[in-house]
Length: 330
Ligand code: NAI
Picture 1 (cartoon, rainbow, N blue to C red):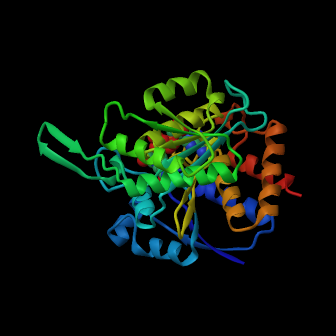
Picture 2: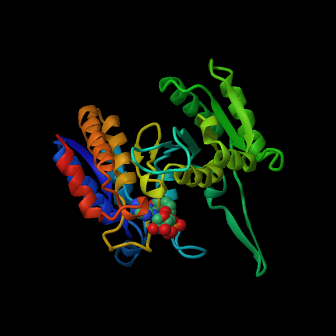
Picture 3: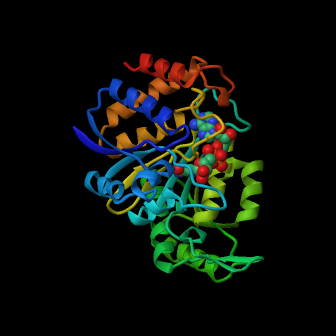
């Protein structure tokens, strides 16, 4: 029996969480889910969007599965997601990105792994209003955080037989901050037998759109990593299929790349694949490799049978799609 924290989130979060829990249960994995709430609803009762009990739960269980939490845009409370990553020092955001069967995309054989620094950069939340017409944000980059994420990217590349790592920056303009990130990647690369390639983020975006097959592992600071992750999701069928994990020294939180999708929330239209793929990685992480393999095969078989949600051009509801996966689990 595993003890795992579940943060159900809001928007489409509850729908896709329920779908994934049902599939994991069918695969026979025994999990005692420690369900925690966070976000806007919690403020009314507990005063803050991320109460200590959520952090304590992840610290106790070491592993969490999380679905998206809405962050108010341009005002309101600080992102629960950013806070969680910071409080638990989940410094690496790992987002493998590859084609799924029978999901029509512009390019075949995309196989990119995005490694995003998760704790600093513009996400440090150091902002101030200078006057009514001027505001500024501090882009904080440190050698410690840059070297440890570079080490994570190279270790991942070696362990997973990847061929090279490409560090993505804007070091021609942000000479000090991105310059430090680049220098850190160069320093760490000297300890490995794998090549480090370098590219500027604007060119990287164009190259990804024109020829994604030229990339292998991408190493990026926080903001570029966030943006490029969504671009890469677009290459493999959209946000509905893009998985992710936040991994630190002591804890790991598995969550999809996408947000709470308020435009389709509560309509039984959400694609649970991204959350399911994140959960499959979680099962591998806790040693449930056989269940992870069975679920992945059932997911692929469902897609091959052309049962797909609307974001992938199909007409299955979230519920139909989930039931089809459940039926395909042997
Ligand atoms: P979003 O990722 O929620 O949605 C973008 C588009 O993709 C929408 O059209 C949505 O319907 C579609 N989409 C996303 N996931 C889907 C799924 N599983 N199935 C089918 N379609 C899907 O991005 P948006 O609208 O920019 O953000 C909404 C909220 O989510 C914001 O408050 C944002 O801060 C938050 N957010 C939370 C994240 C997290 O909790 N880790 C990550 C990203 C955003």
